[in-house]
Image (spheres, one colour):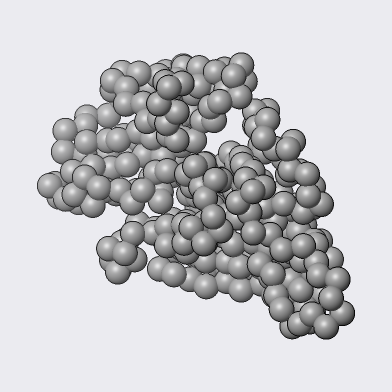
Length: 294
């Protein structure tokens, strides 16, 4: 494993595996080594053949709470009543879990996977492309898509400041995982941002600039910041030239929010009205732009 240094590890278990046991083991390895972060636990349900949970005990309910996303597969092969029966059986465990339908066995990778941490070593043009085009073209054209997408930018003429982390933190903690599936962003911060888990990335402490850029990856109520390589980041320090263009803007946040169907309009309004995304020193020279992509 160390020799291959993979960016992601996908573990496919048997259908009888316990999600809680798997999640706790990955978290343990993360705490001990600092090399692993749990991105999510996904359960695939075969709608054509699934008969419901064999065990609906208290223990089974506790295990199921570690499930982050349920994917309904083969739903196209059955009638609506069969699909509704699966939804009823899900209700037997009395848990609220985000769910999506597959598209003939396929699910958009933007829902399944977070932003690749390997992008921390990419140049900024690749990072921006990953943010703006993280959704497959086919799904963007599919009016029956299971997700909706918001593209968000925050700019400021003061290039030495970053995003107001307290306001951003309120957004990350208030986002319900059955309405928002993933948040992926490039964040400029003037101090070290904190991840939700007690797993620290040693590279985080190496950011020596007053302001630095980080990859934010939020999924299912958990989030982590990863540093962008200092040598690769094209963050522009404030100019001392008195003749510099005062109209120039610096992007201090680029974000993609992937939501469940029918949630984009509500969350666009909440982000704007609750002022979740702000520069550290808001002014008329800062600009928040939110665009719905699909």
